[in-house]
Length: 336
Image (tube, rainbow, N blue to C red):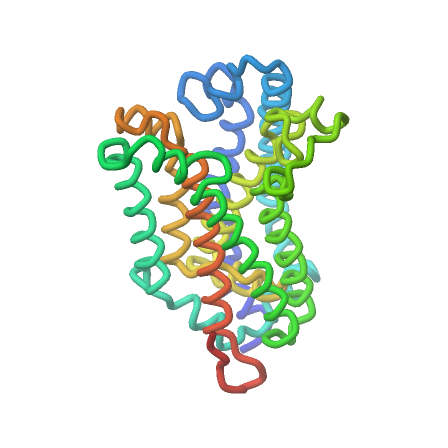
């Protein structure tokens, strides 16, 4: 098969309709996502109406940055649309198209929705939802506090799972990857998951009983010795947006487009299977204000902390998926 024919199969010679739709979505998001709309719909309402001025200011800045990002994305996509034939002939695009797929990528692209990861993730999600619905009825206040509060079971379990993810990422770096880009990504994973572990428990502040440094306390929304609450909840919102993009959007693109399949392999991104991606999407719907409206008995439940627990479970499953489906130069698979 010649290169021109291969390019046409992977990327159509005409502008994909999905690209036009994406441009329209970015345009509408950039023009119409306003603080008033977000307050009305519910997302970020708590931050936008917070009594803490620092939280309100940083959240308003987030909304402005989001609108600017959407308008820039719209402009770039429009440029791609009008230069499509030249764009698909660029050196970078050709390198992606000619990049071979490994055995693990072919298997991942054929994964069914109802796989083991989906079943495990949905099971944990149902357990969390049942706790949110019936927890106030079946547990004493002291037991609920031990589960939900700061330094509770949920928080420490999330931290522990992030620590496990960090350790597994280091192991994969040394044992289970010969792709240079992917090895670097697993180093980033190891550092990132360890950072999540430390931030989740405020770097042991309440364990070792040390005070929050004054320079951090003054700009920390919760007066704790962590970085993700500096200047409000910008880091939390960025983390959730990043998880949604990486664990939901990219896997869906990969399973629906041969181009994105090759792109993620060339870059070295280990993505969740389709089943796990859908599970991450379901977890992203667990929002505090939404849960409180749908389940009146959930008032007082640590919804945010439980969502973080589910995210940590999802990342652990992602790493196990990669380990179990990766192959190196035809060598037998290594399983955990």
